[in-house]
Length: 167
Image 1 (cartoon, one colour):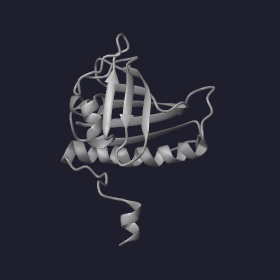
Image 2 (image 1 turned 135 degrees about the vertical axis):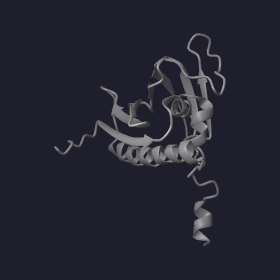
Image 3 (image 1 turned 45 degrees about the horizontal axis):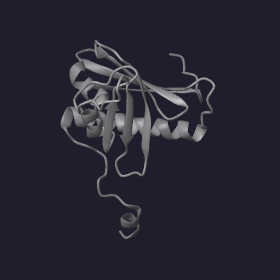
């Protein structure tokens, strides 16, 4: 098997999840689902009149989003690029310089989830952000599997640097 070539422009992470595709898709393309494994708060807004979608409504192509991370002082706004009707693909802008594409395929009675983050052509793409995103997605895809299959959220709720220093 050939060794894949390293790229500063793109990476992919994959994980097998032992659930039906429609169950997994709820976690990646709805506000309520995203808060179970990735975010503290998530909102999607329609393109037409900027109305906020309900928590369990699927995002649609060209909808915008506002996401807030748990335990961090970090928020992100962006746009949904694709959320297909068979519920197998969800793509979105991720920051100013990249996109994320999540594809679900059936694999031996389970779901193979493949996430690809790619630099947006013509945008400046920071190498440190690339490395951090690779590690970030590795953890959060593991957390997604844990939440979907076992209802266990691996994110730390009580961690503080000050608390760690006092141990």
